[in-house]
Length: 227
Ligand SMILES: C[S@@+](CC[C@H](N)C(=O)[O-])C[C@H]1O[C@@H](n2cnc3c(N)ncnc32)[C@H](O)[C@@H]1O
Image (cartoon, rainbow, N blue to C red; front, side, top):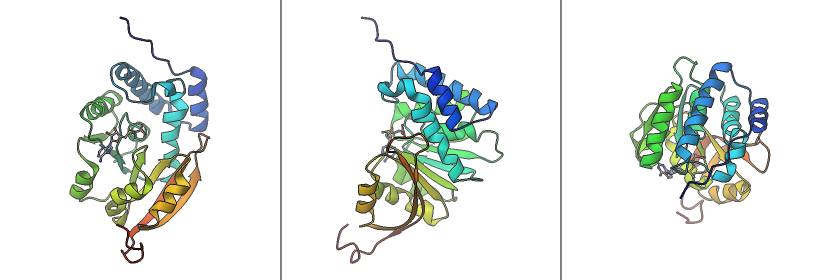
């Protein structure tokens, strides 16, 4: 039985993405190599929802690139639960020409970790894949990072728990979130006192970026005895 043909990214969507988040010619070449690889692997491994392939450039690439304007000058990044590489590989492609820039991609799924390694290889972007659990990665990280990112990984209260040691050590956290952000923030503030700002997504819809510069665990008493 022949395999069903996957939908392809459209050129109109690519043009729209590059208008939303312009990149250098060198970055574009890397991103194109990444997209080609992703489409090859997508035929055998589910890296993104197939329904999002026609809008891959806006939905995934521009969505990831928009983070860069929120951390001007940041060089070291840790992307939690990188999956198919959003936002981590996209940021690595965009920062490849910045001296000293480096991205840790933390992913516990073995196939996705293999894909991420291959994506860094074909794009020549500077980064390292950590095939392990986020908690183990954070526990063993001694150097500060400038920025922590995550998309489609977990509710905010859990993301704050993952990121707290790195934010305490000076990182800014940027979490790409969908329409449930207000209720997730309400839940998270039962456990955490945070300094944050919400930025509407440049790629439209109900999405936003939660920018976090402070995370402090609330005492059990303040949290009403909740864990
Ligand atoms: C829904 S995918 C999102 C992938 C990507 N960030 C995106 O937006 O397309 C979540 C990814 O996080 C990884 N993941 C979930 N919990 C993790 C953990 N505790 N440590 C490392 N990776 C984790 C999963 O294996 C999966 O690849």
